[in-house]
Image (cartoon, helix red, strand yellow):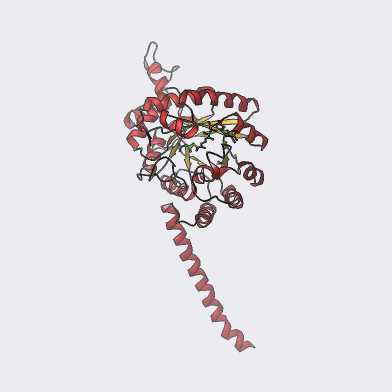
Length: 380
Ligand SMILES: CC(C)(COP(=O)([O-])OP(=O)([O-])OC[C@H]1O[C@@H](n2cnc3c(N)ncnc32)[C@H](O)[C@@H]1OP(=O)([O-])[O-])[C@@H](O)C(=O)NCCC(=O)NCCSC(=O)C[C@@](C)(O)CC(=O)[O-]
């Protein structure tokens, strides 16, 4: 597939188009639908993403889900103050999008029962969007009353997961979401769509690429500005992600309208993201400190850690616009507040380095002060 993409990229880059092809040529017909696979320059909302010589996007938007996906499964109720402080720290780190909370039933997710308070108290930094999850019209009403300007609906590619998570069939959920999307857009509010269990389900097992693609296409066509394909329990591999994304692209969702949402249960998340970037995706969901999990899958780990994604992007020279120090501060803060080790390997390594550098600087400052002391005493 990568070779095919490369050939198509070159063909498109060298100007093969419906205008430039020989009369009667089959190329435009063939290239038209396949062009969606090609990571050539494309628009993401208002911004345009160009491509590096290696076929990867030159910049990636990290969609931070820590305050919502990361915290929704915590056993202990996290104080609202901690949630607000966490979001405020993230707001200063350069994120363009921070998913803040969910307006879902507190009977189903008690951990986020303080959604209105969180949204009311958090700092809204200019240029940052703070989407919230809304499973139905009641959720949308709460979000709008709190002043939210972006919401997200979440369907599943698995029937069993849909019933367990939102208490209705996939078809019924899509009807419900369409109502939410129409009403939100009428208010000028952007709606994102999620497809959970896009490559595997904790209850049903294997999920066919076509099932994920159909739900993704339904969300796209009902007006979601972006559809995030989620490996909810982290069972995907680059091969299964590629198959799922190829099916979704073929179903009519263009690459610039797609995001990926990977959990890291089997340690494949970074590889899965790289595979997705190669297919033209340039929006990646992640959670600072690798927060999160899935209540329906024993042993499932959190979202891919934002810091691990940043480290990978830096390695490729792909810009992400985030401030490492500020992200590490937020990461250390929330790990300490939750009383658990940091779930990001990159953050662990970099925080240890930072602590060593701080200790060295403190020791050097102490030595310098001690060296000055006798002179000061002599002078006196
Ligand atoms: C969809 C429902 C509401 C259906 O739940 P239901 O029980 O079928 O709904 P209902 O309409 O019968 O309402 C039951 C009660 O909840 C109330 N209620 C109803 N809706 C709301 C609301 N919006 N806000 C506040 N309250 C609400 C409603 O008023 C009623 O209260 P009562 O009359 O009993 O006092 C429920 O199943 C639910 O809230 N589910 C949310 C589950 C959830 O948040 N899961 C995690 C997010 S999805 C996810 O993590 C995947 C994702 C996105 O991260 C990607 C990935 O990794 O895969």
